[in-house]
Image (cartoon, rainbow, N blue to C red):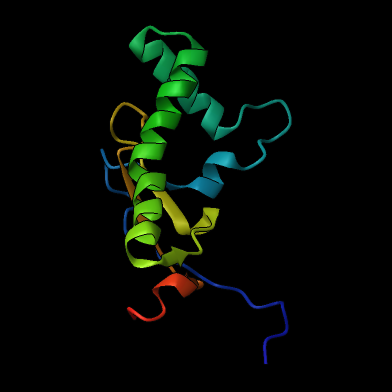
Amino acid sequence: AESGFEVIFRQNPFRGRAGDPVITVSALTAEPRPGHSSLFETIVRRVAQDQDISVRQACRRWFECYLDCALDPLVKLYDRFGVALEAHQQNSLLDLSQQGLPSRYFYRDSQGFYLSNSFRARW
């Protein structure tokens, strides 16, 4: 029986690979230390500076890239096969090697999935 105090250790296969900054969504959204910016804010501000656009434009561009590489495939998986993944922030990794913009999404450590009742007969 689970007690609720279990610990999971995960291996990061991307750690230390130069030029391939893959990071968990939870690390991007973690509350920063007092007086510091979050990692996400730092990245978006760098995108704005590197592309000579406003921070607002950089936020929009970053989110559009996120939707394209992360959310769209998850929705398609559900629409086509009725499979919904529990893609929590700690299980969602983003490749930010394209000038700080999400270009690839990795789902790891499946904590669960659901099958839609509408696909029950098919499966």
